Length: 130
Figure: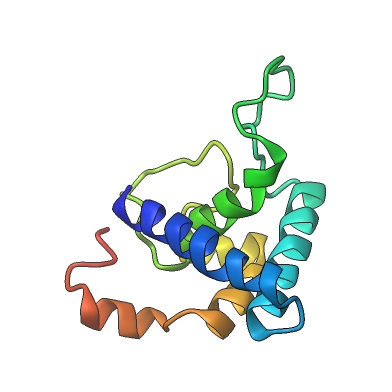
């Protein structure tokens, strides 16, 4: 969960904060792209913010957090950080290969705004951990 909490912190107190202060900044543009991808992923059925159970009476996650979790789950898939055999309840992709197939627009977003997969491997030997 360490990577997830770090990305939440960076998103909430960095990207979102700067996007609100200056919507036309690169951070505002990034957040707008993320919001659009989030909405498309929900509509396409590749991201399930409250798990795949549509009968949940009380939502586990408030709508304001959808983009945060989508970004975090996608980051785990993009960098292949999930353990082998992991099956996400909220995202249809648990690996980079699955993310490429299920949400290629998010792969492009990650490649645009985040370090390359090769760079992450160099900084964190052992990842991907599968």
